[in-house]
Image (cartoon, rainbow, N blue to C red; front, top):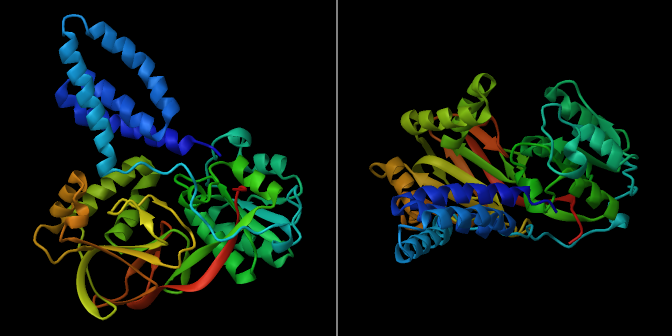
Amino acid sequence: MGHGRFFRRGALRAALAAVAARPLGVPASVAAAVTGAAQEHPVLGVGLAVPAVALLARRGPGRGPGRLAAGVAGGVAVGVATRFVWPVAPKEPAAVAPERRWSDVGSVGEDGTGIGIVVNPGAGSAAGGLASIDPATALRTGLPGAKVVEPDDPAGLPAELERLAEGGCAAIGVAGGDGSINTAAGVALRHGLPLVVVPAGTLNHLARDLGVETLDDAVEAVRQGSAAEIDVGWIAGRPFLNTASFGGYVELVDAREALESRIGKWPAMAVALARVLRHGEPVEVTLDGDRRLLWIVFVGNCRYLPEGMAPTWRERLDDGHLDVRVVDASHPFSRTRLVLAALTGTLRRSQVFETWQATDLHVRSTDGPLRLARDGETFDGDDDFEIAKDGSRLVVFTPHR
C-alpha cells in the first residue's frame, strides 16, 4: 500500500506544529516540526531530524544547554499537542464486510478480463509505480485483459459506464476522483456489478479508506481477486459512498467551481471559503419534524473520525449508520464560535455544534428546493427528501487484508 497520504499529512502537521511553536523560539519550532511529522510518517520525521540536529548544534553555542533543552522540550510538547486538535490518522484501511473471492464476483480474470474501466479525461495520476505514466496506459499495462475506455469529455463518463455494463462486463471500474467513483457506483448498483476503484483524483477519500492508495493497489486487488461489500447511503434518491451535505458546504463547492478554471482549484477554495464565511446564509429546515436554522448539515456514510467539522477517515465501511453533524445558526455569533471551538479543540462541547448517528433523516425545507451535495458533487434537490441507509451494499475490489 502506498504511503503518500501519510507523507502529505506528516508535512502538513510539521508545518502547523512549527508555526504553533514559533513564539517559543527557533529550537522549539524545529523540534515541533520533527515531532509533528514523525507522528504521521516516521520516515519523514527521521529525515527532518537529521538537518534539525545539525541546525540546533550550530545554534547551541551561546544559548546555553539549559535554554536549548527547554526550547526542544517545549517544541516536542507542541508537536504532540497537535493531535488533540487534529487527531493522527490510522495507518490501516477501514474495516469492511467479509471479503469475497473470484467465485463471487463473476467471470473476471487475473489479467482484468471481463472488466471495463473508464478513465476520466479530467483525472490526474494516482501516485506510485505504474501510475508514473498516464492512468489509461498504466491500466492497459497492469490489466492487459481489461477494456479501458477514454472518453473525450468528462461529460461522457456516465454513458461509457452504462455501455460497458450493458455490454456484458462482469465488473466495471473508473479512474478518477470521488465524484467519478460515485457516478460509476450508481451504474454498478443498477446493474448489480462489482466496482474497481482506481484513485486518480485530488483527494480520493473512498479509495484511501478502502486501502487503494495507488493505481498499483487497484491492479493488485484485481489480480488477487479480493473484493468486499461496503454500505451505500442515499440522498434524495441518489447514492453516496462518502458524504452528503446541504447548506454552507454546497455554497462552498459551487463558489469554488465557478472560480477554479480561472485561478486554480486550491486558490479558488480559499477565496470561496472566505466568501461563504462572510456572506453565506443559513437554511431553515425541519429535520425529522424539528424546525432548525442551520449553517451546515454533514451526513457521513458510516461513522467518521475525528469528531468535529473536519471528518477525515472511517474505521468501518459497513456499520449501517449515518453520521450526522450540524452547525446551529440560531445561536449568536455561531460562525465565530464554531471557528474558535475548532481551533481550540473544544468543538464537541460547543453549543453551536451537534452530532448523532441515525439510519434515516427526513428533511423538509421551508425556503424551497435546496442545493444538495454527494461525494463532493452538487445538484438541485427538492424541498422534501430523505437521507437514508436502506441496506444497499456495493461490492468493490480491495487489496487482500
